[in-house]
Image (cartoon, rainbow, N blue to C red; front, side, top):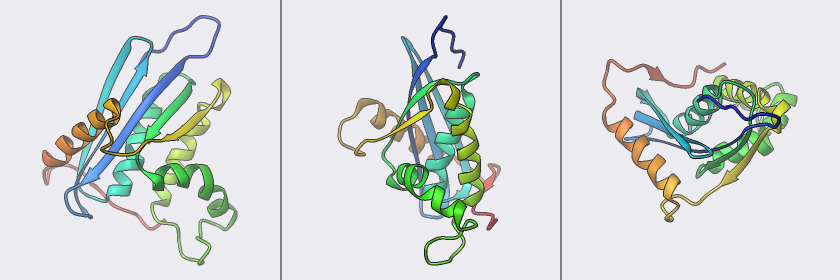
Length: 167
């Protein structure tokens, strides 16, 4: 998404969602990027993945789509995603990517990609993470849900597998 705004940082709003048919199973993710009067929808799919990975993938792809650092307000209905990036990840990093129970952090590969995507936007004001209740009438959240589910339903064996690599 091209973001041009003279003299100030661009403000972008993003709504994300991800899901699977089965867990693991075929999955899809979606993001809606809003900049002023402009909207852009992104989707992707995987032949075999998990719900959490699709939630994370939606945020990563949306943030990486922006062609320069922006101030971003990102809405998700995933507490795993929001709390992971805002509360848990610093402890995981400090503990060598181990949980408080000394177990390896699941989806470490995507957490690291998400951290990099978020850090890219820090100079412009960073990413503000917002939680929205799923299936509660939020127009953009509902649209992202439809897009993610459609992507999951159209996933085929030709689509890539997106599972935890165990890093």
